[in-house]
Image (cartoon, rainbow, N blue to C red):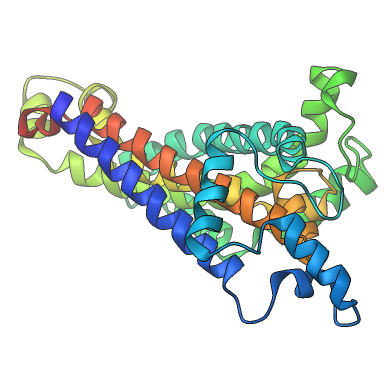
Length: 315
């Protein structure tokens, strides 16, 4: 297990290095001058030169890369050109919106998908299975921003149970904040729950066809007991991959939802940074999201080893 852990840590470090180089090259070595791009076409040469000095663009390419990486390792993400505050402060404030939203949506997606997938697998070919397959196909086909607008129309405008957008802040209390995140979390969770339910159904069906499942049934276990006691754990191995990918997608792909509901999260910060040409913010936040994605993938690999003892024996 220790060798497996060391191998995955080395893979994590290598992935981060490659990702940081790619992001740096895309942002810093784009055609044209980043400082001139941020200031616009009518900027004075003196102003552009001053901004280049402020952003640290006067050094060589390796020096700029090492300075950027060294700053991120010490928590210095630079200073936002638009807001004139450290990017770390912006990220910290927005992270307390995006991270709870992502976890909320992931919990909803999992609570919906796992039992639905198991029910569909245990009733293969029956009306319940057909209803689940049809509903999940619809959930996959419909984009999440359409779900978001539909939820706003029904629950915010017509029923007035929730607000149409905005975030009151955690200082107002836990429940008011969670209520403001409910509709966005549902809009994010429904398409992901549809995908996860179909994967869970396929995985359980594949597991139910194994010899040890037939042996368990021959010993007198009911189909429900067989599914819960024996099939569920082995069926979770491919499902863990989807869960890891979904967390990464929900965290990094919530730009549209956060803009629909006017949530001050990381997705909206990236969108604002792009529209305001604040490349320092875009560069730092994208790298942070990439780190989150790679870290979640690493944790999923560890979960594989915990669920499947064959990986531990191989390592």
